[in-house]
Length: 185
Image (cartoon, rainbow, N blue to C red; front, side, top):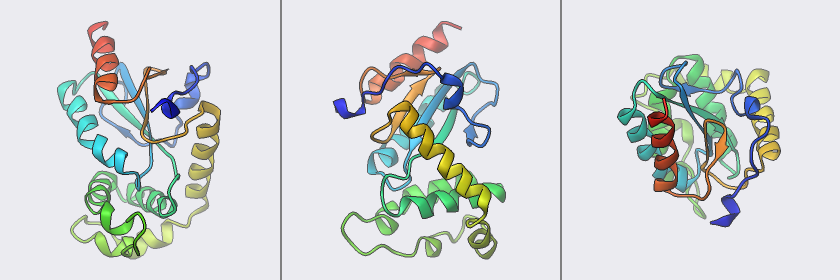
């Protein structure tokens, strides 16, 4: 677990980039930044916890997603998420990718075609396939990869709450600082 310990942030402004997807109120006073790998089983396990925190503090908390392509199928999944965002379908596609993660990101088995799992998300799949190759999306991947190095992120999910890294990894270690920040408002 100590591999998740990251350096203190001195350049917190770089934690949130203009291109980063934001869930919750854009101007919420408490920001959780999550370095997220769509193929990561721990990210999948933490997703309901993050959603619960947002539901507990709907006006106070926003989540900023930063992409971390640590697993082989992750880059394609991130390209797909960004293409879905262009169609206003980021949330349903993200939910579907996490729900079907064992099929398209099976550790050690042949993966299913990720595009074939997106029925019922409302995504225009042919358009998304084209848009997933746009140079803009490559620049998002490159910037997030650079920031991963800057912040010393070595595993996912890695969380920052209002610019501060968690002391250690775990559900209580995420909920505690969020609660403290909300109570301090």
